[in-house]
Length: 175
Image (tube, rainbow, N blue to C red; front, side, top):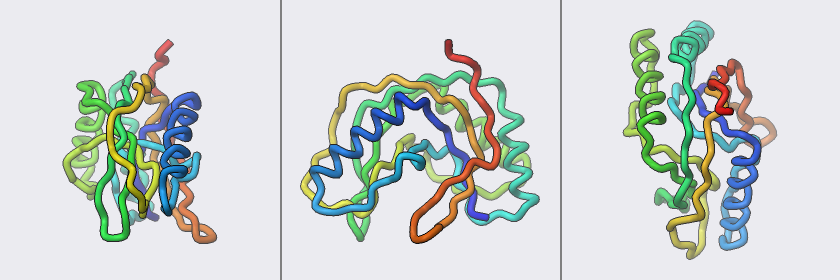
């Protein structure tokens, strides 16, 4: 099973992200644009896991202290790749978000789970393999919150990436 742990957002934030993605689509020559249901923030990429590791990943999420994390999405940017640009919506640095990420990684380490330990650069991927002359920059700020932390299964089905939540831990109510 190919697994990762994601932070998910409320529907109004997904609508804002869809708007950013559609603006990008209209400005692009080509690209592969992320489906609505796949818009998320990756907190930890685990990769190929067996059933025991999957259960341990659930334990790592269950061990998180109660969380209520507000975030601001304030920029669009990209990572350059050989096959085009990976465009994303960038989140402002946040002590609460970094704390959630660090606590999750500590839990994963304690349980002996392997994970991608790259520097945390909180972003929400909007499109891959994008070609065009768009410029990164500031966007109107989207204030949001994390509604849950989920263990996600990543599968290619009929040529498309499909993400399925295997376990979900809801955030504290943000009223």
